[in-house]
Every structure is written in C-alpha cells, then in structure tokens.
Image (cartoon, rainbow, N blue to C red; front, top):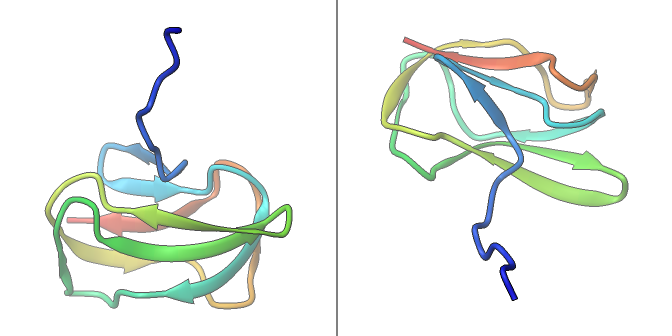
Length: 84
C-alpha cells in the first residue's frame, strides 16, 4: 500500500535551528560552536519514551549556538541548536 518509507530523525528544523520533536532528555551532543556539519550528520541524541532519537542536520552548515546540555530535560519545540 501507500506506506511512506521515508525515515525522519523527527527533529524539526525551522530555518537555521533544530528543535526538540518531543519532550525528552539530552543524552549526547556531537557538535560544538564553529563545527561544520553535513546533511544527515547526527548533531544531538535525546532519549524520549525510553527510545533514543538521533537529531540530524538537514543541510550543510556551521554550528552557531548549542542551546542545551547533556542531561537536560527539554520540551517539545524547544530550540536545541542554531546554525549560521
């Protein structure tokens, strides 16, 4: 049937920021300010509903701000990362 096979990281990217797709806890941050990322690079890992979610860059960019910390509880829609 018409099932979509598209895999999504769940991350919401609005303009140059990545926001939390659901409430959860940040378990890993793979980038620092000034790092260059490519489309598909895992930038943040969060745990939500006992599952690990990898949040990926949607395009090549340079990290401008990291707005979360490992261990932080985040809410849905919270801005986690900003690109230049």
